[in-house]
Image (cartoon, rainbow, N blue to C red; front, side):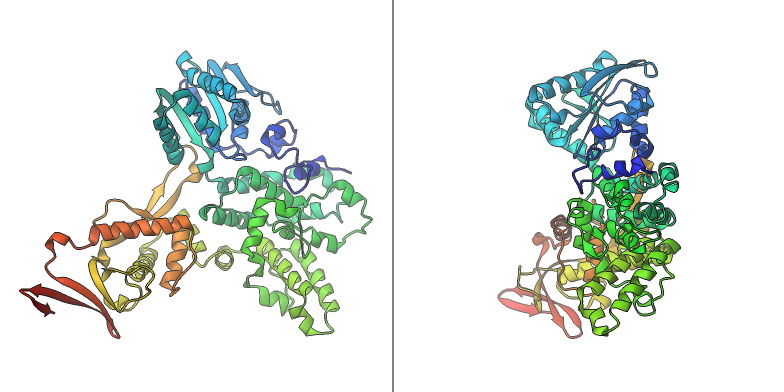
Length: 584
């Protein structure tokens, strides 16, 4: 028995040529779209704004960010289109509920420049006529169209400012009040569990329960294994997408959907299962196409070239998470104990491990040196990552092993208010790192109440004697945890950590990248590879500190020199008066 939903899932990713539903424009006409569609809080916010008064809404961002899907959601909410009705290129529809017309443009980016000019003007004029509009466009075409119409660099700068702020409020641009939403600035990570839960909705899989191939089907096996451990699976996939987002490698909604759909099916079809002649309960195919392998872009122990077309999989393979030592490796590979896995996963992992061990018992060296045993251990780590029976403590340990020692802490700081002890530990890490960045070593940090600001020759390394330009008291450095609220999606609300200096008005946010950098430096790393944007942020903070805390040149009578000794740094004052030098 065929389940048409399997074919639909296969059409959502770009790992093969049958991806006709990868674009939202094509998806909305598919009967399964309405069942997997996620109702976005942003859509509810915009619908509320449309009810309040006439308004001009512009949705911009990257391809695949969900702009068209959002228009569909809003039109469905006001019953302006039918279920699975295709969106027109543009249309004006009267709404009984709104008591006004709503003009929408599905995607201005795909049209000619003349059409773009005409549709943007009409969209902006709708409010003046007592009606509303929603216009969708990728960022480049939107900026270019505004420039063609208004011929003003100020308009472009204003639009860029709105895109950067992305606060969901109306603002005047070139005499027009618009509500601009930059979808590229929206946190898509919060959507991933909602999407995955919808993909695994029980009623979509009912035909598989009655299928004669259900006992040997790897896809149905994946559905049961994922559903049986959905909470932990969602924690893991969210952690990966969060890591990507916080490291400036954000994935679009389309890329997330492509990754998750492939992780369920591996692009196997019902006809593939029906025609393979496998007996019931064949664990080898279930292992090869297990979601823990597919999620990472593998079929069994082999890297799959088609899967590498999916961006999330390319990023995962670059991280090499399955090559990292994990807490249960000893239990798996030495004690042959797979009890940490869920029942469904263990029923696949145990016989695969036993089969390979029987094959390689002739020489223990083979288990360490040959490729297949090495790849098998990686595959079982992948299963451990996705299908382990984790509690809150063990999953935090997993994330620290996979991503960074501070990643679990970052998630904790982001989601919950922290206490005084945690704040104190983190503040000490910050001051220790700043001391190293300015002084060049940790020498004297524990006995000093100040961070010295010496003159450092670029590229010269550590210097024993340095001209002192200023200093900052450690007590002037504060750490605060500030709530950040989204105007249009409460799921995006979170906390940020801010570094504050007593004499500097601005604060400096601690991103995941900065927290990771602070941790490495405070533990003694001499240098570490950092993201260019992080490097710019650190240099900006150092520049502001130098600028604010350096000695005032007009008041300098005495020159101070920082001398590094075996017992710590020592400040020597030098004063020249009437051709005589005084040293203190």
